[in-house]
Image (cartoon, rainbow, N blue to C red):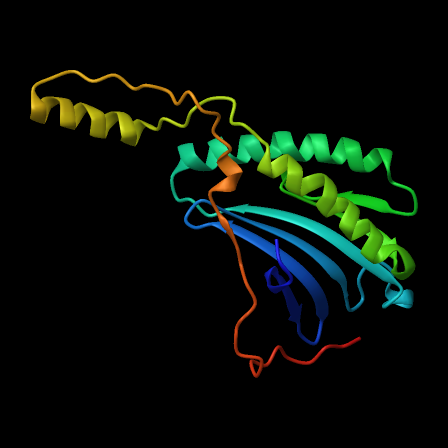
Length: 187
């Protein structure tokens, strides 16, 4: 991870520093620090920051979506447990099915808590080994067609090496052009 991987996302309603990771056509991860207008406490807007984790599966194949979502949920459960143990000066909120969670924190603690979230979450993703190899019905169908074409039988051999399924993506980098407008920021 490098400084160019951190993005500034802002408009009239919100402002975030974001770290985005993507494995195209499978999933997107986002880690964001910032605030939104009339967010957690409408009377104290600007005093409370959000540290947000968001997972989105973008695969159109149900088997792939289920596989990656289940693996991601295992990571989220571990991360939530660890972050809950070090929850001094922060308040958790959870979204649907552990695909989204956040931490509400006063501005004085925002950067420290965001760094703690990254320190917990990123190693879990990098070192997560899939419980089983992904073999979809489409893959089995392609295997069967190839066997018929070659007049032979083939077997699926699992990798001997561990499959770190969340290492195949890349960080989204900020645009090279510094003149790209990001919009107005309300804060």
